[in-house]
Image (cartoon, rainbow, N blue to C red; front, side, top):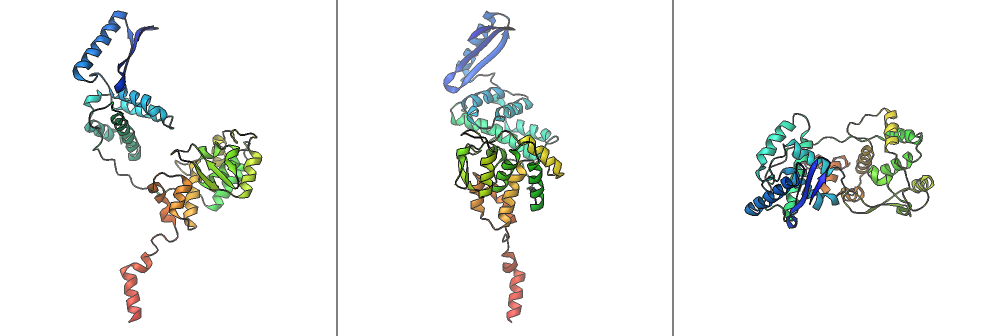
Length: 329
């Protein structure tokens, strides 16, 4: 609990293990000073039921230990901790929606509303999870704070000629795995990491099976026989990963095409698949399953590309009905 460190005496102990409250502090000049700090911290906690010095970063640490460490996003903890410190790392018990609202106003001078909304969701999720775990017994200070409205932006996708150009540059890459991974993404709408991490047993009988996906659900998508042959011929033998990392090789190939899609690189292939799928009359619910979206709202971004989208406006509008009436008279 109290150990001698390179810069003095260090303290690391559970203030309340059942509540997930762990205290760490370094650099005490003497062991007795460290012991007094532990004793005083315990006394204050027993009197007030909560560590009076507990800061927002302490909650993020507890969240990471009990929940965040199980998530697939390797950057979630560091990003959330950065938000806590950007807020000035306030005392947790005094943190309010007004504090975040003021922070948000300043933050909007440097980033987009979408980024601020992400930060809002990250911090709100910390309190929600700690409440579920019984660690935080107060109300979520961000529960009633509404997200900023974000204008829906048109997502870029590649034309067939542009797809052909991208695949030509991938074929010319010195990394032989770039082409099959890019083709998998265009054929199935897979995320680049999902395609790149495929193993040989996941490719068989004209299908690829994606596992360990973003939402944790496996899915199988059919592929052409020519693509299956290319995957198995270029992939590594054995039951391990078929491909080496080729994201940077794709980036170079994409840059050689001269195409410009801000904010999108490998993900442009996924958007291109979804866009062309809908333009060819694909079903929106089926597309949701192919892409592996947990929420149909995500997939609905492509619905306007369907050839029959709002087509009934041509026949159901008052103007159309007037024309029909006048013709029949």
